[in-house]
Length: 379
Ligand SMILES: *Cc1c(COP(=O)(O)O)cnc(C)c1O
Image 1: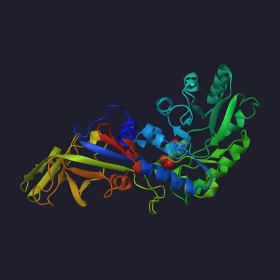
Image 2 (image 1 turned 60 degrees about the vertical axis):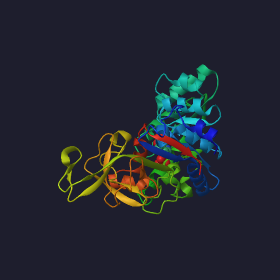
Image 3 (image 1 turned 30 degrees about the vertical axis):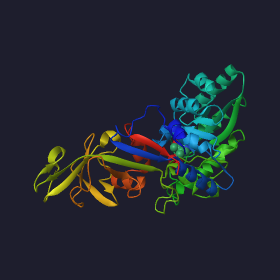
Image 4 (image 1 turned 90 degrees about the vertical axis):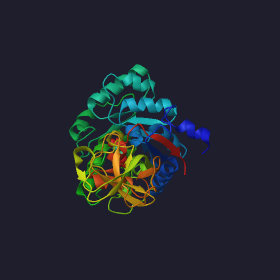
């Protein structure tokens, strides 16, 4: 990738310069594209969308969508209308953009003007989209979401049954997909998967005939019966393991490195950080990095950084803008102000960090802060 296209990919024009930032977030768009191709291979001939809600799981919805479009991805899912409006502006007309959480009442004309596709989660949303189609004087695209057993979004079975009694319910609506979402797809042996699939079968048979979509990232690995006509992966695109407990079939996408702000030596017994939650058991060499919970690194998150493959444990509490590392493993002067230590990368994957923190990779990515220097690369 040349410099010009790198610049054009870097989201907000100004960004944060490398010199000014405390940490550098590297996002490998080439790896995201390769992950998309791996998922497509897993899907055989089935179409594959890209889920780019929450600003592309924190990695930049515009950059991710633009990269996936190069591999022919032309369907995107966001959670909120606000995200859909931003994405439409950024990627232009062409790809379909679905708003998973449904359109807020009254916002339909704005969604129509932006060329967004509604995800219809209720009878009321169906009525509103039908009215919007009438107002626009043309058929409007939508996906009907049904609740096959997650109890989160979509029409409940009773509501589907009630809605379809009105033969004009879908007048003016171009039902492109019937969709549903799996609650337990990352547990292949969980009985809810098959229960949801059967409920989905039953509900879609009641609705206007349309292609179907059920699988998220992990759902793709439940096998062809879960593939239907369109898959909707998010996490796996971003390198999160869609098959927990088995080796990760995806490439890592994210690198995060923080700058050393200062180093020091301390004597045995010296207190370290807020609350003096740590006292040195002996002489220690410390490095303070410009990175803390304001950058989305939760206080409970992974408790070490890495430098040249050496683990550097956190000492004391994570501060808002800094973390203190034990660098006693290195000879004095080895690690200096301005050096970069790894928080996410070859030594510590997103899933590793999540495991240490008792959370999931999704939360690690979605929590990533906004004051990094972001570097988009294409490996
Ligand atoms: C977030 C989401 C997805 C993507 O899920 P992943 O587990 O990240 O692949 C797909 N469909 C719906 C309805 C979602 O909310």
